[in-house]
Image (cartoon, rainbow, N blue to C red; front, top):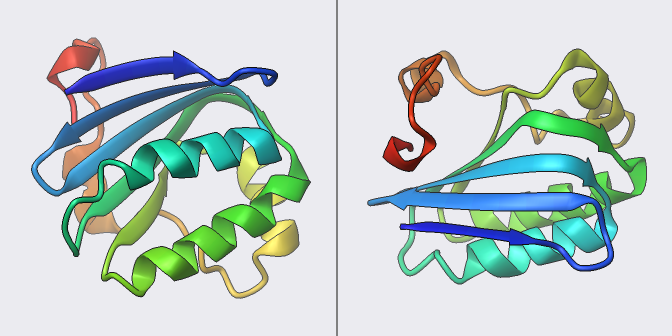
Length: 130
């Protein structure tokens, strides 16, 4: 299932693909607090059972407003209460540095090695992912 929408009033584009218990979210542009709120509301609608994996693909993100990091950390904590797992995938060193400014405990750590099989192959058609 594919849904693509642009967050009103921000420069964040959110594309969501879901396959079984994996929700793959491709983020484009600038992610700020309003964008995170819209992200959370759209992904939450997809979480119809416990134990889902949410992958935030930041390979198309150009900037992360540091004030949005706290909301991502808080969301991660709420997700864990329902046995969901949140992963950051494809985030540049620049974006990771912004996350680290607030995420002292590395709660939004890097994608585990086991997730390498989830990487979108070069040239893959986006409608075929996750």
